[in-house]
Figure (tube, one colour):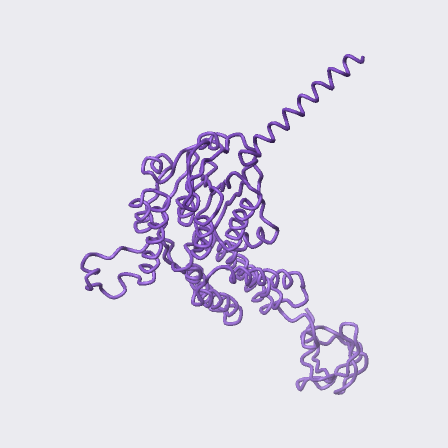
Length: 456
């Protein structure tokens, strides 16, 4: 028993020594790498997260910061903030476009090109960094004659051209700094080209393709990179990874910074408030409507928006409401839908500030259609109510059958629907005997006029 205890102690001691040696080796090599993951748009929340991740990696002595990226683009201002932090970082930054099917579009292209090491998973893509127009596409490039000054009015969007030139110059500068294919990255901005990971490697846009994180770290181990003008050798193979998570506030703001979410919240808020105003006292639609409007307001503070687009959406909501009162057989409804679709395509059309747009077929059309159906049901219900006979108040007594309590000659009392009324006969009647069936002809104040009821 004692021999077994001594042997166990030796094994545990050996394991402990091995662990200490491994930790010492890792500490000598940097100890660990930090991992930041971005999946979604580039906005103030994701920018704050990445900038904070860079600062954290510098403070805790990480061997490198690995950014796992999957983005459709984002705000120009947020992208610039990230690029500035990356280019001035005192820690090696590795950008890895992953998982399979991910993309580094627009702002993602800038971030990938700005990395000390740029890598992609198989089945990913990069490029299409041209600013977008209101329709979600790119603007036509001017012809030679147009560049010489013979440009017909309105054929080239000056704002788009300005944004394009600024982004192309920024991309060219970054590519030169990181020794990447300058010609292609400028082409990605001016012509909106995009390529697969294999073509990107062939063109010198990225450094390597890796199936997973472990393979990536193994393949770049020993690579020399320049950090603030100084050469540094990467020693990252086998190091433990420390995941850096977004704070709760960053998660919330990152969610709200999606234009599709913002427009849905705004429309849902409008519906909730409309339902509450139409039927006061329901409480729940009003509370939800106010909550959605508050969240939409926060989203509009994050995202640069166009007032014309917002006004068009509000006009569309107003036309939906007007249909209830004017009964134009759907004309105002149709105009409201058109206004909302146009406003939705324009509201985030800010090429100088953002390349994010609302999905026309995926979000706008279904949202407007749902609002039209909801509004149509309300109009139908209100119209049906207005056409229905009155069921409350004294006027609805007209036409009811009652019974005389006393002889009417020409006045007396009658009993109608559980109530006693002072009544008089109509002009064509002279008198009606007691106990006879009578029909209510009219009511003025608390006085009723009746006629003899017709017997079948």
